[in-house]
Image 1 (cartoon, rainbow, N blue to C red):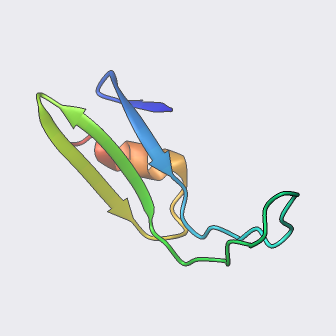
Image 2 (cartoon, helix red, strand yellow; image 1 turned 60 degrees about the horizontal axis):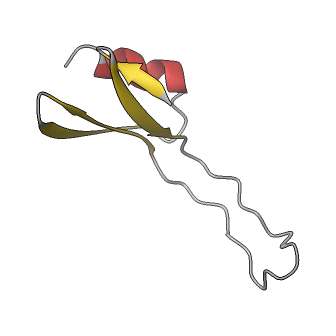
Length: 68
């Protein structure tokens, strides 16, 4: 968890490398993805989702989000 303007924000890092080493009892794997880095929060009662390039770092997306 990070904060944006003092409000808790969930950040999902992009470029998920995948997980194809399932542990029992799992029977599948998650392939690599080129998903964007995303930040989700609520400021002033408004839901806010910010998406950046897949290779953005957490610091980059928080920095951009702090300008909202």
